[in-house]
Image 1 (cartoon, one colour):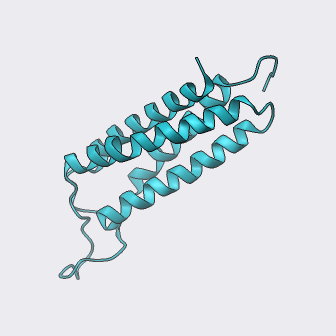
Image 2: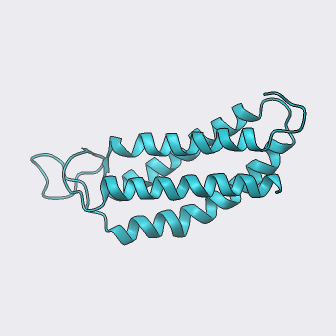
Length: 142
C-alpha cells in the first residue's frame, strides 16, 4: 500500500471518530459553555446555539472527511520520505488541524465548549503517530 493511501486512511478514520464523538457530546445541547458572541436577549448567562445532528454529520463527513483524505495523503507521502523528524512534523500539523476544527465548531455553536478539545487533539495526534509509524522507511528505527 502506498504511503499516501496510508496517510489518507489514518486521517479519514480520525475524522470519522471525532465526528461521532462530537455528535454525542454536542448535538442538541443548548446550555453551558462560555459565550463567544452572546446572542441578543441572553443577559443572564450563555446558552450555546443548538446544533442539529445533520449539521455535525454534514460538516464532519461532508467537509472535514474529504479534507482529511487529501491532507492525510499528502502527509503520508511526505512522511514516507523523511527518515528523521517525521513525527514532529506530523504532530505539529495534527495540532494545527485540531485547533482549526475546534475553532470552526465553537464559532458555529456561538460558545466555547471544552468537550470538543480532547477528541480533536487526541484523534488527530493519534492519526499523526500512526502515519509516522506506518510510513516509516525500511531500516529506520524511529
